[in-house]
Amino acid sequence: MRVLGIETSCDETGVAVYDSGAGLLAHALHSQVAMHRDYGGVVPELASRDHVRRVVPLIHDVLGRAGLALRDLDGIAYTQGPGLAGALLVGAGVATALAYALRIPVVPVHHLEGHLLSPLLATERPDFPFVALLVSGGHSQLFDVTGVGQYRLLGDTQDDAAGEAFDKTAKLLGLPYPGGPALAQLAASGTAGAVRLPRPMLASGNLDFSFSGLKTAVLTLARREAGGGATEDLPLARKADIAREIEDAIVDVLAGKAMAALVATDRKRLVVAGGVGANRQLRERLRAATAKRGGEVYFPELVFCTDNGAMIALVGALRLAHDGSRDPGFGVRPRWPLASLGQAAG
Ligand code: KG4
Ligand code: ZN
Image (cartoon, rainbow, N blue to C red; front, side, top):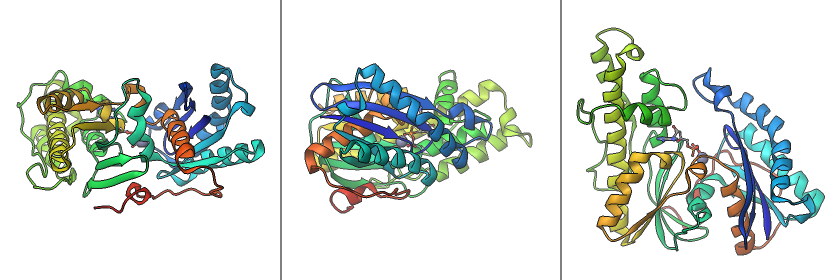
């Protein structure tokens, strides 16, 4: 079964074709990061308009590279939510129109389910069950995953997401959007422990997260260091020390909670998904910690950590095989809790 996947939930237009036998046949991505950078974040209306410009040429590009024609497709999957309403509508409109014209099933996909199952795109795929740490710009969640569509929420953020913590603290240091990669790069030249920040909720005894206190602590620290000047104008070496401590604090909390979730569920396999899963420090820490416990950690390839069409095509193919085909009607779901797909949140 060959499924075209279309992702337009935020600032990346992603298109891919996934074959349930042969795996990923082709994928293409257009990132709007450069366009939004001047504004310090995603401008929803600009995002929607750019998706309109990019999506059809990307579909042609991907089909061409896979050596396929539209008639070779068995289904079309698109991100139905969560995300920006206008941006989601572009993918939903194109996918639904194409599927109706071709008389093939259209499959609405939950964006986070895409992230969650993206490690299945790798050659070394995790078996079910596993614990998933989902860390993106909008989410920091832990799930117990027992199969496709079986996601039990173990822990969630009470305020900011991990990616948001990276992005907001990076902004305080005058780093460009998106802050995560920029902060990680600067942190590499900083000295560990040169400054000290809290590890929010690390010892809370549950699997929930909270990152807004960290942001406030960074603001207080940077203002004190700047002595009345602008925090963005601190000397680069000092900013690197702060960046290092921010990264260490976030990694300590994410790794601590992920390992606690493995213990609580008595699972051996951990899957890390979402944009923050691209963070090298986090990867190294979790590799060491899971190995120590006799377990394993799986990451999507770096290109499939952040938003992409491949994970949507993959979930589309899995869902078609799992649930069969039915007409879902047309619509987007800008707010859509992942736990509502499977068992109730617990
Ligand atoms: O999953 P994603 O592409 O989009 C959402 O669905 O939110 O995640 C984007 C987030 C941003 O907050 C970005 O700063 C963060 O992932 N990110 C990173 C790294 N690469 C991306 N954070 C830390 N280290 C990285 N290397
Ligand atoms: Zn995402």
